[in-house]
Image 1 (cartoon, one colour):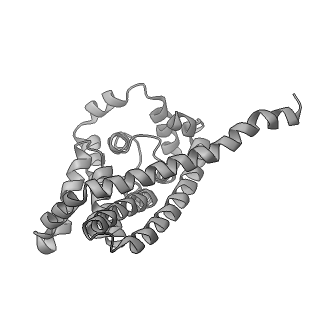
Image 2 (cartoon, one colour):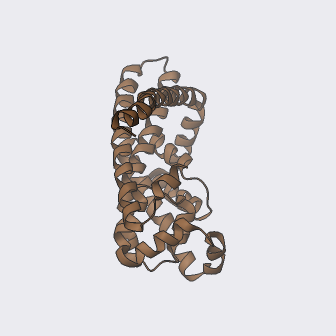
Length: 248
């Protein structure tokens, strides 16, 4: 087959892909605006409830988040709430601390208390088998890449990593890989919170919300770029095409 034929075959797909991504981006923005308007009252209620604890509010949030991670609850909702309540900078710090605490608790539970249960949950999982082998050679690096681009579900992955040979110290250091994703979701929650506030104030904060949305778009692009690099590196280190499996 000639090179021109290959280009012809892949050309239309390559042209359609940006439009598909643009459509998904516009749909996500529309959903975000709708979410902010519908959940405006709820966001304010939750913020008031957290504020009611005074200086202990962030601690209460961290404890609730960490327990949710241990209980296999999706962390996305609480991460979004953290952004809406605390803002981007403070929210990222608080949510990251909560995610590290929750994931570490799950890691320790799997290693010392519930090893048999976790082994049953991941038995026969080819992805985990490849990851386990790679961790045996480059523990901290592999866990860091998993945090950058979780090809294994986050909640279950915390427990599964407790069965590997990675040390607790390396596991904790590699948690830094969660920062890009945490920042993105917190930023998303912050935009939703500002949309809710703008709706409640009759649109007085529309300009500020628009600027925050632009920052969100830039953050999302950087996070996607970093994630793709991490997936390729993880696939090379583990010897399997984990990136393709994760997307499939």
